[in-house]
Length: 172
Ligand SMILES: Cc1cc2nc3c(=O)[nH]c(=O)nc-3n(C[C@H](O)[C@H](O)[C@H](O)COP(=O)(O)OP(=O)(O)OC[C@H]3O[C@@H](n4cnc5c(N)ncnc54)[C@H](O)[C@@H]3O)c2cc1C
Image 1 (tube, rainbow, N blue to C red):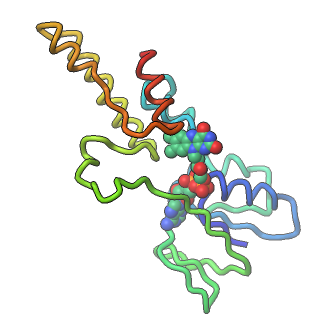
Image 2 (image 1 turned 180 degrees about the horizontal axis):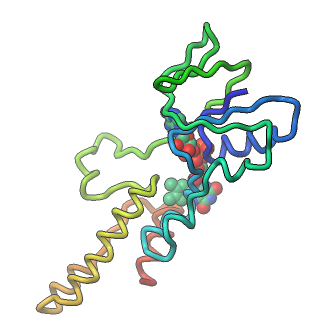
């Protein structure tokens, strides 16, 4: 059994198969599982990146039937039953694809430099940098109008992530 992706889906599948008479290979382009629900706390400096990222090998260190490979899967050879990840060709009997999703700007990709998404650690640390720099600039602002401008944050999207981000910024 090969599982591509060690996010929520891939991890749950692999955990259901530990200590079963079946060889499980997990392939992920990162060697850590990212707990995305707490990324907003990394973005607001409440947590450090290490608090939300756990080595995949560590999670399965006691499970001898599970092995972990680092690789970005680029192709599936369904006829040959192989997963292709760069130089790696990993054969499978059964395959689970759990590669998650990306955020979208719904045709407004030009917004991305101004409003990064929040799906990866690098997104969270970029947001954290921008938020902390805004507070620093507000600290040394010459007048109240400039201070207010620096501390005016706009969050687009009022789903769970947007609401959590807004709450965490307000508390900062
Ligand atoms: C900021 C934020 C807050 C959230 N809060 C909550 C919450 O409070 N409650 C909740 O239930 N859900 C929450 N979610 C949603 C939840 O995190 C996702 O639904 C969940 O992570 C999806 O799991 P997944 O396994 O499908 O994908 P992911 O967790 O995204 O995992 C996909 C994995 O596949 C790997 N991968 C992708 N492409 C490749 C490739 N080509 N080759 C190899 N590996 C690859 C990635 O590295 C990753 O490890 C939140 C999401 C975000 C972004």
